[in-house]
Length: 430
Image 1 (tube, one colour):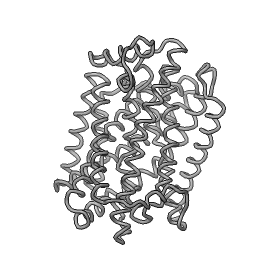
Image 2: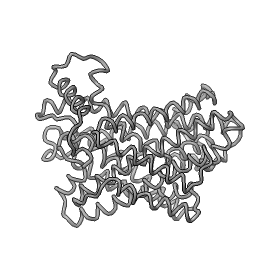
Image 3: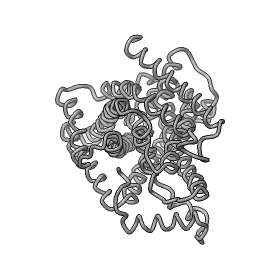
Image 4: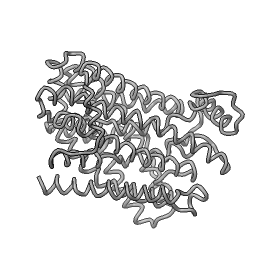
């Protein structure tokens, strides 16, 4: 698995500091105490600010202004709980979600789970890879084919950091998240959203189209591939042998999730707010794709805004594509015990993007299609996660409380129902 490797000196120091904090031997205070535990949730959070989120948030802000800000807030709170439960499963059981499925369920069902998870991971990776490729085309005029080559090289470079341990990779992903956040600080400064954005935090709709778009935002709350991955990132990162230490580790892990997912949520809200202040406020509510959004920013806000948008999209695509490849490796190795070199998996997952480019398909349309495919995988990740984390035989005294279990099933039912509605509307409802 991703975490099954010899620890580098940096990793050893991180683990040493974390254990000292857990055992209350550390003299550090405040943020210094928390730092050794930060990382896994930042890797997972990249999936929530991928190119698919760019498209949805920009479309929502352009068409309806600040109206749907509350939807992003609600979706982010749901995602926090789901990602925490994934990381909790890894910490308590010492196994990732696919491994627990493999241990608990019959082999034919496990093989089915592996196949659907592979399809979901590849569809997700396709969208993220195309997002980075499109960003290179917008920023530098690089043809899509060569942009795909450069994106692949960049992803290879980031994945290569794993040979130096988990900490350098976590740091690299955190830098990408920081770049995206900084780019949207620039966007907000240039677009100058008004105080009316506060009204967007009040739950309401304006007709059926806004409801449909809200369903799209909520329906995309769960990213199945990072549910599988997050549990792998935490399963052996910091050793906690007994119940007392595991309880303390879970508290620090919760802070990791809350901080990382809050940053991702604020970035998503900034995307929508910037689109509302830029496009909706000037009557340009028909922004249908990322290319149009980029091209429209320059005449409205100047070239800096367009560059900031392009840089954010590039950072999003490269980092989320890297995380997608890591997820795919965990899925294959954990469900069925197959293992291939990570560079080979990256090469294989690049092929669909090259096919799309060579066929001349519209990248934005492919992004939409990939989100439809992703919807099929959501129940298969959510249902076992909730079943296992509530099972006292598996989790012992750290099994979910009734409140957490009920809340989780309400969220799961809502998200699965919304995705079924989206699938119906997309495939049959036009």
